[in-house]
Length: 349
Image (cartoon, rainbow, N blue to C red; front, top):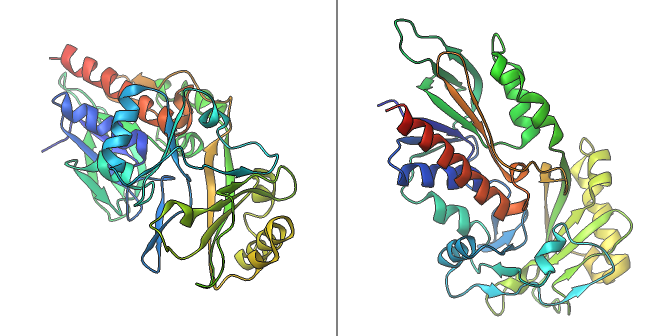
């Protein structure tokens, strides 16, 4: 059965969009090229222990969003985490620490939220969309999108939502054959949304290592942006694990450098500022986020929709398409785009 909407990307915005669209009576399929849902709401298992190596905690203000977070996180979540901040630096999302904002760290990791949103949805993992094209139907029939997957399969739908980071969405749209006029108008909007990279190191320490007295360190200078005591969010007695995140400038300059070189540089800088023991982990893992987050202030006011000649529709949403930004902005953006798609589908009869 042809879905009414295909969502490309199973991050927070894509899942919120699909969930709302299905609740409104639409048939929706979500395609995700990775092995799991959540995008930058990422939790990795290190010796069986959850470690958040993208978004460190969840936060927001809107009551509906906070209710959804609470349902996903469960009673074992750590409220108001991080409790102890050190250093003069600025957080990625300063609004998380302002009055009226609620912070939450799920004991099972931040990926508990996207997993909650994905329940009951038709999500295909490992589904990499290689290209898009618009088929122009004849005889008065509406046109469809054709999505070519890396498996050789072609899917069709009258509507597609790209919930990828804005630069990735723009790159995909630039290669649509014939570049319909409605798409060409979207490209400048995508380019307004700027993303920042982040080189990340997960460091696990011997069991005898005493835990630090802080939850998060924000150095404010050098190459390290954030040092997170991830195991402070876990069960009592959890093995000590830190997550080190480089600042955007250093990350951009070293995206193509060997992981060992920048991993060591981050550990040494963290050790110089917060304790020599940090340079002596038992094990490390490195991860490159090429588009870790949206540069604050470059977010657009709302998701974007284009209706092309022949009736095929395209939508763009994500944390770059809502002024709140971050996870909360992504959630709002997905729901707002779902409402617009459902309205168009109902008016079409």
